[in-house]
Length: 473
Image (cartoon, rainbow, N blue to C red; front, side):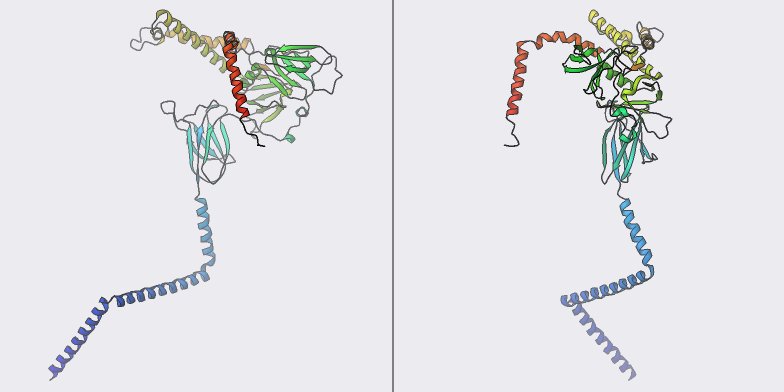
């Protein structure tokens, strides 16, 4: 009897399990019920997670409010600092040639080195040299410094903003330093003291002009007109009129410090001096040593800036051009003599080779000037004489420049009666060649064909101007 009851109970539970299994099978296979079940589970999980986040946030705000603010501020700062940019450019000499394998430094405004790099070398000794780049640089003010191995390197101040900065070609051309008028104490910047004349002229109203010749002779005149090759004037204090060829003048300026004409010899001497060291002799007898000197490229009361290596501030000293009587360059002037000796030897041997090739109608004469590599014990015919001649020409130019005192350069005379101790003329082979060649072209310039061509150009320019629209049309 007990066994039957137990069997009945087992059958009862089995029947209940089978019914539950059937119900679950039907519920699982029902799409609507499955969708409702999933939606209920998702809603329950989202509500639970939101409640947990709110409780955590309330706990952090009530307990760690200062720390959270600090972390937020630090994150914003880090995001700002991460914005860096690139600086790139090309380092070149004053003549535009790139500088390969030169050290480039990135400095701050206090000239403290932040980063260093080197410029790229040339490909095939010609292309793609002198390039440099600084990456991951923060915005601000910096100084780019390039060591060229010369006295005058490159230092350029830059301002890096919110984008990459392309500097282009950075040359070692030194701009004339800027200054303010208050720093200049010499009154000659406003009014230049007139030359001492004998007798003293009564005219103190009209603007007079000072013509300085190549030998230093000065005349105070009133300029009437200036042509291409001549200058016409009236002597100050009298009614005598005269003229002078432009080629014989060294410098022309008025008594207010405005320069009207600079000769080629004057410009050549200024360009040569700006590469040297030396000392200045002023009109008042004072002297001043300098390591670098730069003439202001202005015709209106020009100034002269001198730099001194022993001055830790690195600031220039300014002087009025009209206060300078003489500039004497230092021993570095010998570099010019050596260069002229090299070019002299090059011209001589080049001409000799050319004449030999023409006379013998062969390209073998230049081979006689090369060393014999196959038989070193056999001396070539012209090699040793050629290399010895270069040294001889260089020494000859050094002696000639020393004898002619080429290191002395005079600029403004003391008075009308005191010429320069030496003539300031500087020979130019280019100018001499042009003067010799121009007479050969005079028949061409005077020919009827050339004049008709010039007239046609003028008519074309006139027609082009007539076709332009006015702003009032």
